Image (cartoon, rainbow, N blue to C red; front, side, top):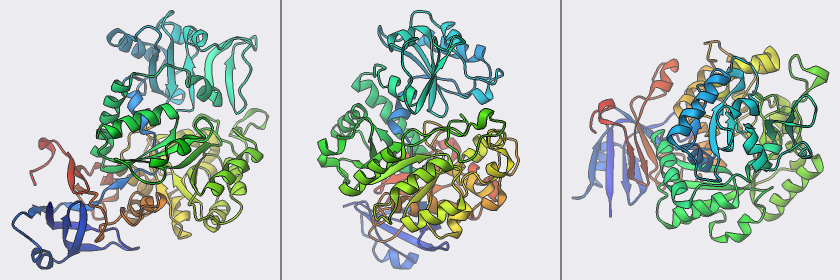
Amino acid sequence: MSEAIYFNGDILTMEGDVPRYVEALFIRDGRILATGTKSEMTKLVGKDTKLMNLQGRTLMPAFLDPHSHITACAEILNQARLGSASSFDELAGSLKKFLEKNPPAPGEFLMGFGYDHNNLEEGMHPTREVLDRVSADIPVIAVHASGHMAVLNTAALLTLGIGAQTPEVPGGRIGREADGKTPDGYLEEKAFMTFSSKIPRPSAESAIDALEKAQDMYVSYGITTIQDGLTEEASFAMLKEAAAAGRLKTDIVCYADLLKAPGLVQKEQEYDRRYHRHLKIGGYKIILDGSPQGRTAWLSKPYEDAKDGYSGYPVYTQEQVDAYVERSKEEGRQLLVHCNGDAAAEQMIRACRKPSKLRPVMIHAQTVRRDQLVRMKELGIIPSFFIAHVYHWGEIHRKNLGEERSERISPAREAADLQMPYTFHQDTPVIEPDMLETVWCAVNRKTRSGRTLGEEYAVTPYEALQAVTCYAAFQYFEEDDKGTLSPGKLADMIILSENPLKAEPDEIRRIRVLATLKEGELLYEAPKETKQDL
């Protein structure tokens, strides 16, 4: 039996609609046994009870990740990082340097992740000719920061069988040169997803090693429940192997790709909506459109300065979406639906039709309208906002969507006023799973330039914390075990350098996670130089 008492700090329970603190908290065998005054908890102390003096720091529930892709995050740890590239030359140079130190094995691809055409001097996506500078013989692919598009060199196009006669993929696009036939290397949305699935994967052992590193990253940001938000059979096999080897130290929730792995849940009944060695399958995931910064999100009104009224496009027909939603209902399994544009959001809402107890989730909900949020509440749809877009791409949204629509990107205030649960995520590996930065974004709504974007849609620090603790637990049907520091729940907790509710709003993202505990066990402790010993 292991037990500990925590005291002498701000112990924020996250119970209820207003902040609640307790003087002390007692844990035993991985669960919270009791909370109350220090004197009450002291009565429970035995000879082996650890006394944990918080020394004025803040103890609160660990964060739950409402949407990301941990297996994809693990993969990019072994890829060239392209996020800092500001030109085609820099992008090619970064790939060349990575190639020199990390030559791929025969038949494997050289991969890079994170370029953003919005940040390149050329103001456009690179082409195969740019990546041909890196290598004429080795297949090379550079994936966009959004994860919805990529560029391939000529060798990669040949390896994947993409040529002048390759037909277009519905719900996606193959970039073509001036002749309208020759591929220029660019792949978008479903075309990218279809062909990228053919790229050789790393060995199981190296994949699991990378997965452990990815877990460590999440844990360092205070996250103990992680999502794999579009799981294919190969990635689940890797997660399953890691679980069997005892290498999962966090809870990982998978959502089977309903397009590529429709039978995964049926094959893996042991993991169906219940944890086995820290791994479970929570339900299904589908994608209805693209990204607003990539101008592929499906909008009800055209993009700013769009030619011929271009407003993005759908991945599926309404009938197809109806069928996917109906399948989730028939099986009683939760469905996560990627919707960035309000037209895609409308497609999901129409498909849901009747109120559901399955807690379907609208992932991203970037441009969702108030009238849609009202109907979502009636139907039981949870919006999960990628609210850090305000900071990372806010200025791009102003350019692509215009002032009015960009101001209301991720309208969390409206969801809060409607008294409906909502969550916040980072869509890692799109950005790192920095929950405190996300809380800061929701509270301050500042862009990279320092401009405030849609101040009226900001939420309070407590409301922002609810989105990544108790509301996130609700999204996962795990509110009985996680999300608050309540007796009986798992001792999934974090210790922060400051209290986010007492810090200046603009300082929230500078608060440090000093320790992360999963079921009472220490998973992460900040380096000594950034903290005093507890």
